[in-house]
Length: 456
Image (cartoon, rainbow, N blue to C red; front, side, top):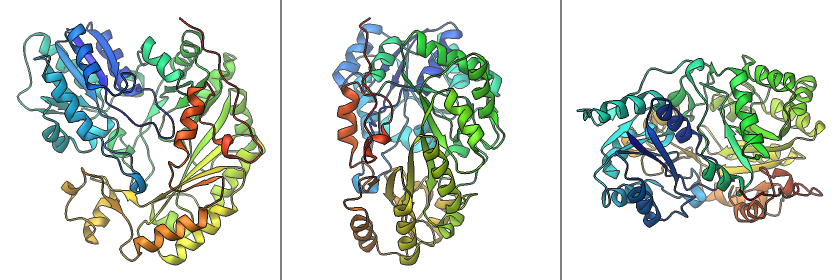
């Protein structure tokens, strides 16, 4: 069966991310004997006409659309993406009778409403490697489900999670937009952050891939695709069970080193561990700090203190790791006092870049959604498809915005709104500078050298 897979993502902030989920489903479909063609909306310059031409040329029997994000989770500059998906569905239907299937992380969060709003034929909830293969196999026999929503499927074991099928053209496109390629080493998150969707999407139990297969992926990207920077997309790279160290040790055993970044949780790291990670290319850290004082960290379900954040930041600085932090203001119980304390704490951090968000995007089935209903912020969990943000009802929104704006105005390494430097970073990526480049915003630092792209 001919299956076209399309990534509908248009998010560029803070840098474009390779559509890894789509490519992992494409790999599973290919392994099952189907002919797969991968298409990316950003690669097609977000042109619906170009998508239509791709469909006409390939003539698919089935079309899958990967919905990575519902919106950009930025209250200060909100952008809603489901209209793009609806327009894409309409454009595809104008040139083919092939059934259209939605999936992806964003879709799986609010599947019934997104399916209804876009007019697609089917939707798969959760891990698409099994559900999409089953759907395509049945469709090849002319059999389609009676129900429009399929899943969620039983979570795959770590051994079942295979490599992505890295498309040559798409990989080249994303490398030219920052030279960053994505790899997943595990799924599942055992943490209890009250706003987070990772446990909903991936489950609370860790499912780790074979470290040897992970490093095989790294070597493929480095040697075949000339990748110069790796992004480990795990919800938390330095997991409490130590699975990340198995990947690090496999890289060391095979003498594999390439600059890389990932999501880092404060706590659990030591100088010795960071030195081991550095030998494999550890170059930048995205720290999920999220709240800026102990009271708010506790209310957000975090297992660490602000002191742990400072310790993690200092550890990274000692080893020359370009570090970024992400903080959100307005969580449950936030007051003017905790805001001021949080601002002072953030300004005390040195040798890092800080992205500051106002409000927290509400998502169904999270503890924060239940708090929001109880406090009257929203009426029900069906109110969350269009972007809606939680800000503690006792906190004046105008005061919060003005206070954050004033506090961080002119502070070079503190970005509020969080996307205020996106255009500059994107220009540098287009010029060939590699990686996330948090160090660009650090006084006295210079961006990494441009990568030389070799024509293929």
